[in-house]
Image 1 (tube, one colour):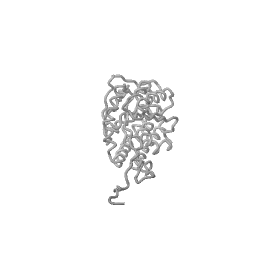
Image 2: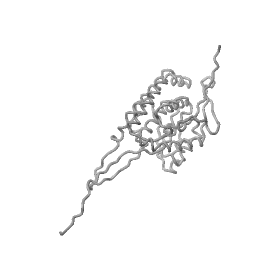
Image 3: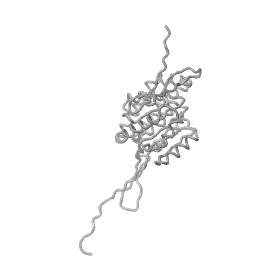
Length: 294
């Protein structure tokens, strides 16, 4: 008997839950033959605002965790992602990626999570310093998380692009709201299912599906987003982000023409993009005033 083909409906991932969009809208993802392979929620401004609210609530607790514990959590994400390799390869196939390239992308995504798990307790030593000063003080500069980061994932890599951008952001104690690839969004919500059943606290990673044309202005102007990481070559989007982000002095990082498979697309510099440097002065000793005669 023939099996009835039922396209999956992918929801949003906000605060560790899988709500439908508050607007009730959805869009269909089609294959090369024009057949529907999945239905996805079309996120709205309200969905984005809800995501920022839960990301802000989760940020302090996530930043306060020991660096080693954040490392354990990223490594656990890699383990669980590797366990769903066959499903992710199949989804990339559905979206027009060859089996060889799909296998390469999933393996690279697992490896990238392991790579950043190893940086959790090391990037502070690389970027922090003791500064020489001309007074009897210790002067330390250390990196600190910026807070809530908006991420616009690259369109061409549905899984690896998302992992490559969010991993260094959360390594440094930030939380994030991600707008997934517009043309290849299936793997993003499958990854969300991995995150939901791992040790990642609710609200640290939030994933939306929808259209950049609608959501980019809201990423730019939301006053509780501290930084934006954008991957793409759309000049109008870049202009909107840079102009809108000036309202609350967001730091905007633009990644153009990056080969996300290459090892050059990973490194501590991606962690430091969403870090601020805090400098602290501390006296070397307390000098007591002299008493008595001259």
